[in-house]
Length: 461
Ligand code: SAH
Ligand code: SF4
Ligand code: F3S
Image (cartoon, rainbow, N blue to C red; front, side, top):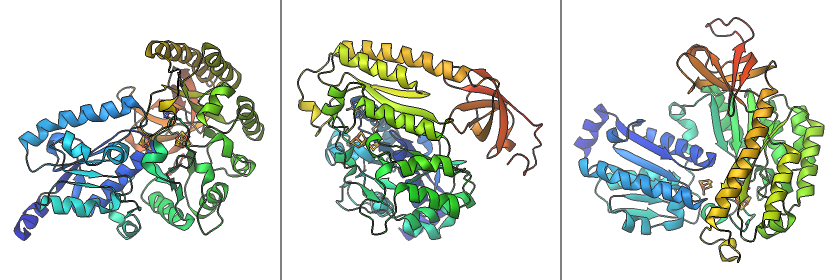
């Protein structure tokens, strides 16, 4: 075994990570990457090269789960070709299905629950040395991130870095599996978050995206008395982060102290993701959301009153059990009234454990599809109108990466979270530059930097 390790130390082991689902999964995948980096694993973007493949899964909708199964099916071939390959599955499907995943996919070696990432390096080590395949789903968090603070070389980051500030959810919306697979709400101590954010900034992050299923209730259960707004103020004052964003906010918990942060903190970008889910009070009640359409609209008015520049995005679903055409019209009414800058829309699907799976009056798939098409057409017109109104304005863009729009272009975001493509090279990455918006499309903008850009550092940053 010793000899084997020496041989392999000469050739770095390769880790391939595939992430499904929300940004909290993206963060967890980064943690896996950082944890395994300590054991000499370097990231590869080619699954066929990998010594370890980690699939981080999502089970929020039926379709998300199906995508996981179809990827796992495709990985079978890689294991045939390379029997030493270790395949691990984590995330919410792993938590939901546990050891039954090992039965269904005999080529999967490791299943780890959503609280088990801290022990992943040990499990990988033992499976490598011949231990049997394992499903590990502890009741308690095995975070394994504190010890990483000393290992700064493991902290590679993009320009935008996600940081999870709280895990789990206590809201139990009747359609949602998250509380069952992620457990009860728990917050990380503010000092630990502060330390992580500063470390990421030192490693090159300019923007930090704070994550939680319901960040507004950050602090619940902590000994310290820190609300989410206090955490934002701390980060703005005590770290060198250039931009802060957060997601997701629950409308029922959106308080005035948090709204005030948009006024007071220059680092906090004027954008909020505030899922509304439905426009009919009857349906909102059945969903157990804790607000009415009118109360939602009132919160939007408060936000816009405090910060007129703020942009708004949201999640909505169609075809919740018992949703009539009339209820659906109320969803469209709310959209027309608020005019979201961006909207993520889903067809309701039954999920295990949830209350709504047992509700009567299920809406047919055909009807859901037709409602979704109608809703998306309405939103497409609103988004385009909003994007067109950006043309001619100058916005500060944080350049993040090369653009998908074509060669020689870079891509970044405005404070309002709109994607902007602009001509430029890699040298612009990480810079905050004023950009005049020249064109608007359905999902992005095109812009031209206001100042002639030099490629040396310091200009526009
Ligand atoms: N914590 C966030 C959302 C997490 S899940 C919040 O409270 O808003 C992301 C989105 O998936 C939800 O906002 C919802 O629109 C959608 N979703 C959750 N469960 C679903 C289900 N069973 N069917 C369809 N969409 C669902
Ligand atoms: Fe799911 Fe509701 Fe919790 Fe969001 S707030 S994660 S939708 S239960
Ligand atoms: Fe999916 Fe789990 Fe996130 S179900 S949305 S990956 S918390």
